[in-house]
Length: 328
Image 1 (cartoon, rainbow, N blue to C red):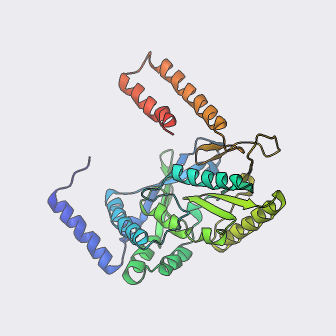
Image 2 (cartoon, helix red, strand yellow):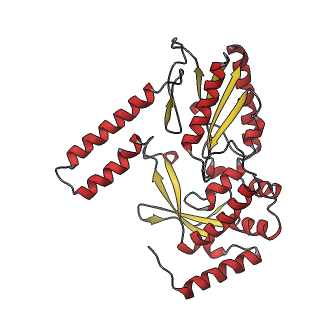
Image 3 (spheres, helix red, strand yellow):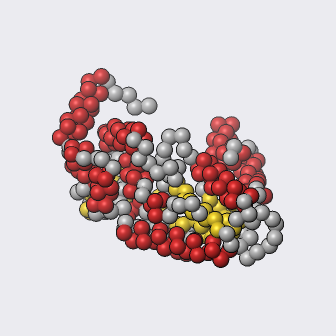
């Protein structure tokens, strides 16, 4: 744990308070090193399969924590966050989002309605956030004057250099996006996407957001009316993305039709939503099978490692690869 002396803490607090009062984020902190981290899927020779992680200083992170707490407190206290957003919010999580989604689908099936879900993929959402649009949205939610100036100063005139295999690139101006690996990046993004649910949320349709993961449940009196509503919602989401400099990856859009019986259909394939396998019948067989396979691999790994590593390493592997699955 990094410890500060009282003098260092006083100096740190003085600098942060002075910057807040002036509405200026220090320029020296806006030169950031970025390291590309492989996503563990896809070709290692394609930049699309890497996530850019910003390496930031301790002072930078402390400053961000102060701003983040004030920003989150303001939004939560004034109930400004969409109730459809479950990501990066205290008391909300992936399980809450999945259970809410399943409950709505189950209720619809009990009423004899046709139910479908669509899962959307936003392409490089964090990296394509427009700074000007984000600042306009912050203003709309009441972030004004010095607070607005401070956040604008944080976003603008940022520079980054990429380090790969020990080689550093020159610094380039960052004209859009929120820094991944930062404290403020996630909260900025959910503020940016906060008004998306309003374009599709009505009686028959309901969106679910976990940061940039978007799912939609739609009910209809028949499969035909359901298809019309799904396409209408998708068009509305596409229009919103176009207006907000984001884009949908149509190739990764997934649709699932729910049913109250076990009849076979062309849509009878389980899909993964926030780590949970959803079946057309809302059953759990696919999810259990998936977890059992993953746990079996982990147990086999423990057996192999047991012959050559310490108990500490075995415990680390267990907690990292097995225990989490058993607690879902």
